[in-house]
Length: 235
Ligand SMILES: [Mn+2]
Image 1 (tube, rainbow, N blue to C red):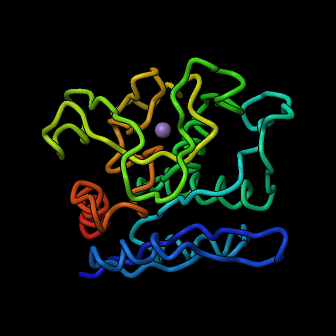
Image 2 (image 1 turned 180 degrees about the vertical axis):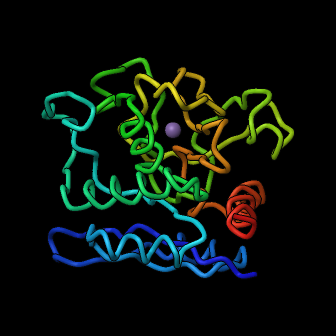
């Protein structure tokens, strides 16, 4: 069965446009899924219909999450936020989470899951954690930026059978306090959590790096997205 995967939309405030980076769609298509870009609607009936239409949900990158969602004032170093996106992502996540539908998060996605499950974020890594590595690489984005250690007895370790892999990195925020339902799967050399999962969920995983930008040259990142699509097939 070809799984249908709802993909959270990106929003360009300058152009007042909904948009999408092709990598998110292309990798899901390559893995055999049918990705659908979702509308900015939190209408209950629309959400219910989406839950019946979609076998899984991919939470994409985007604007910074409003710090009020994790109980902090917005610092000047925090980036632009977009309230509509926060509203949609929160409604979709809570619905899919309650239904135990397969959920995968990328970049903003890992930060979103952590926030909605009770964790906190660094609003800006360079200013709040000056000893951290560089996590905001320059193009091209399909080459490694830093390593991550994979933690034993996690789905990511089982999938890759490796103690360490190299990943790309394009983020200025990161998990500060890990939400209690989540477990770390990958940690950067500076200690920042780069991948999480929730053990008692069917498939809830998220990564801080960008598999959608490296899957064509990094077989592991294709394998990672394939494992999500496979979970959507059996949901
Ligand atoms: Mn990173």
